[in-house]
Length: 327
Image 1 (cartoon, rainbow, N blue to C red):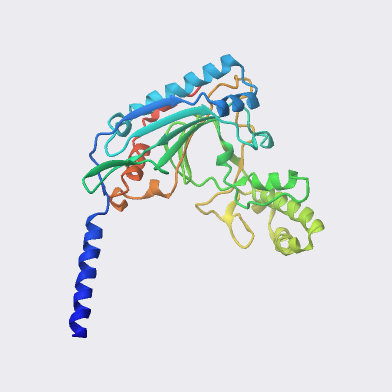
Image 2 (image 1 turned 135 degrees about the vertical axis):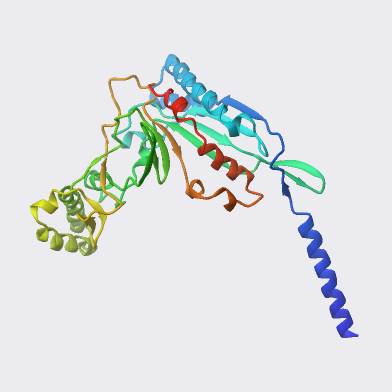
């Protein structure tokens, strides 16, 4: 009797579980979606404009530039005919809290957000997933997010000069050039005018000098830092003049080597911006990316429609049309 009761309960649980799985939401990947675009003319936007010191004319001119890029991106095949999602697009100037701390900053920064609420069906009812939907962002002139520091040190006390010099030693992680002035990095797609350089050459000697200067300062304040300084001071005298003048690469026991690897070290270009141009000028367009960019379309789950559409969107950018938005 007990065995029969056990098997009856087991069968009931299987039926209930199957019923629950049958009710899981189904992504409607072919559902026609809608496009909407708006400029956020709210209190935050006004505050950001005031922080920048933007005049009403500059605000209007900068808005036109963002509108122009949005229009270009609206013609992207994914955004021109949304399927399985709605494209909710918003733009505004944005003032990062640490804007003045980064000496490389010059022009106004614009932000264009693409939110992709995805369509689902459950129990015969269609609905959009609007809570934390997949999103991607495009920036004007926001190059600080591209400082891909190789060592990521923190300031010692109130003096950040030594740490800033170390954090300017970057691993650009260039994947390839997509078009003249358009570079695919491991973490972003960046549009600049051809010939503009976000990163400058760095020699082994320069990298060692910056790193040792920082740890010498840090060790005076906190002796524990000597454990990082000592290996540098031991290795540096062993390097020949030719090795010190060679291009630096990431690797070796200290993180700096003259031996060629696919991972060069370069210096962040703090003089990237042409400061003779108006601050409304668009000198860089940045599309941040993540690991999803390097996946295969087949890697996405059926419910990942929004993330798949972002992947398709970023892989079908019209580089010529986007580059024309640059000043």
